[in-house]
Amino acid sequence: MAVAADGRAAVAQTAVAAESRAVSSNEIIAEFVDVHRHYKMGDNVVRALNGVSMKVSKGDYLTIMGRSGSGKSTMLNLLGCLDRPTRGEYRVGGRDVSKLDDDALSNVRGHEIGFIFQSFNLIPQLTVLENLEVPLFYQGRVGAESREKAEYLADRVGLGQRLAHKPLELSGGQQQRVAIARALMNDPLFLLADEATGNLDSNTEAEILDLFDDLRPDGVTIVMVTHNPTVAQRADRTLWLKDGEVEKLVTNADRADAAPTEESL
Ligand SMILES: Nc1ncnc2c1ncn2[C@@H]1O[C@H](COP(=O)(O)OP(=O)(O)OP(=O)(O)O)[C@@H](O)[C@H]1O
Ligand SMILES: [Mg+2]
Image 1 (spheres, rainbow, N blue to C red):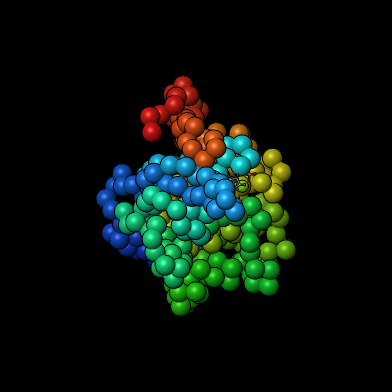
Image 2: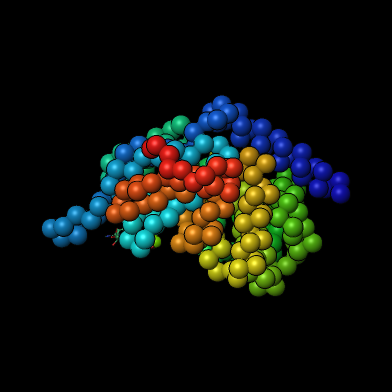
């Protein structure tokens, strides 16, 4: 218990640190300004994203939908700083990252973004505790504090009793909980999820979506790409892509006490 309380204190401290590092409340933590991503294919240019503007504020829960080929993965790669726009600006925590070199981009990824993948991407040889410490290991920050934080976050996602287990000794839903806790280890500005529930049955999917809801009062911000309308509707807003452009931005009725509306962009 004392460990959990200490872990909470450590997390609270780092949360304060993350708070002071970033902009004020209601802050925009991720913003696309007229973002284009074009691919040259011989003589042709594929306009995978063609002038997308959008904003994500602290505490937002946004899902991104659209038909196959509409630009979702392209947008996810840009949001995750795995790729750069051909044209336009991408701001993370107020800073334009669209022209950073690979090292600087990787730094933004490691410090500001918590990734959650469809296939969990845990390291099978490591225990739950060790998997949780991986993001801090790469920053040379493994020690008593990282351990307490990992213990706290494992507890937070309901896996406090599973610290010594390896991923294959856990269910799919439990593995995704570990991945969510891991994504939170660095106090990221936002979580970026790629079909986070795509490999789970519907009951487990509902549990993971409930966990996202449960984490939101902690100030967690979520952006998720999904093909699943039921999943998309659990977010406050859904951004629809079509042919590389924003088709519409919809406020989901059951999340915002309002009839579905399309917002102005
Ligand atoms: N590396 C690439 N080189 C050339 N064209 C690409 C590349 N990546 C994506 N595209 C093209 O960009 C467009 C958008 O692709 P993207 O993968 O972003 O779609 P998507 O919405 O993720 O589709 P899906 O739902 O099938 O995963 C498509 O026309 C695709 O063929
Ligand atoms: Mg895709």
